[in-house]
Image (cartoon, rainbow, N blue to C red; front, side, top):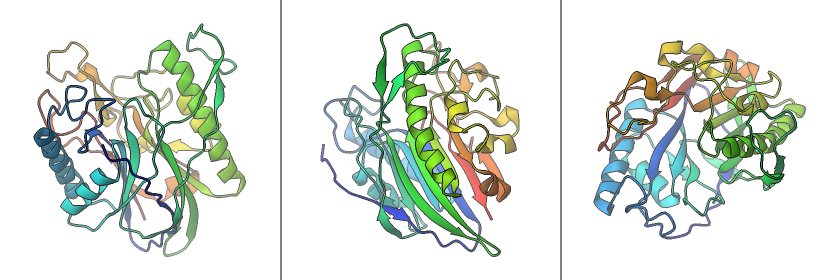
Length: 317
């Protein structure tokens, strides 16, 4: 594993045509060997370097077919993988990355964009105590704290024909297991850390886009199986209605972003789908979305080289 210290800039975007933003959990997109997780190896789906490379090529084809301008990656290892995907794409997208703090899995969030950045991406290392007041997670352990190991924060200026929108982009991958009591409580603390960042930008009268694998359900915008959260993560990140899920623009039967093979039979049953990947936006951004969808262009099953997640996509004009 090669460790990278590649500081990526906060963006200044100049956009005059429709811009496509893509959120994609790419399922252990690792090329460099990471010993802590044994990936590529027995610790992840790709048991050797050849399989890992096939996975990367397959993911690149999915992205290429959707022609995005901005892609946020979850479960990517680092700059090497971003660069390799970039080389496979028809549209030039450059990699931007800041190292996260998840040393157990080695997973990070990363960015590809066709817009040249101006100043570095940054992180917050703040922590928040859990259980938060009023939590219904059922956590009974001692009071502790959690930070957000996988995230980045940046800014962008969206220039449209009739207005310029100063926007903060906050990308994250929160802790897994939606119904686990401890993870639920920890994830609420993570959401509170990010809520503070969101509120700071709202106080500056900036628009906000939050996107990522939040590993939780939306209790208001229900997914295809009407899964309901035990946590208040989505409610926290929406900041009392300040942000809206773009899934409101997507039919409920299409609201699924992830397959979990609950019965281990390698067959994707309808009841095994859920929506845990989200894009949340402030009102002006929401009003400028002309298209929102979840791409379901491949079949979920065992021994494939796509992801166990589907990408979420919005077009802004």
